[in-house]
Image 1 (tube, rainbow, N blue to C red):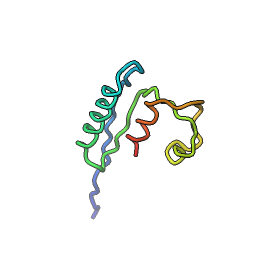
Image 2: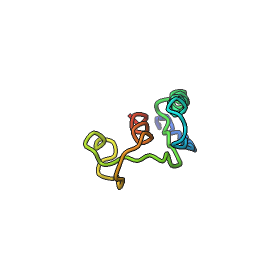
Image 3: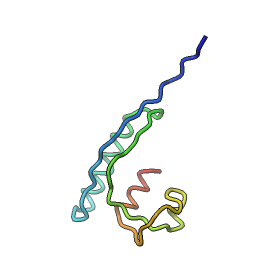
Image 4: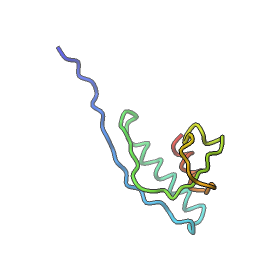
Amino acid sequence: MFGFERSLVYHFFNVHALSEEQSDDTKGSFCENLEHVFDHFPQYCMKIILRDFNAKLRGDDIFKPIIRNDSLQHGNNDKGVRLVKFAI
């Protein structure tokens, strides 16, 4: 009578960003580990990241498809660029 569809499953991740003082290798390793964790969850799961990545992204044309016109920042930082790369 009723078709059973796959239930939507939510996974929340409480992520604490690294400080600016950390080395580029440490930041890269952090991002790789985060991607590794995300890749272990099925595609149909809704993955929501909580917390602040201390990312700064200005509304540059290159970032418009991701952040649109919603940025209030006046500059970019490495964390912002890494976050966009992670999102896509």
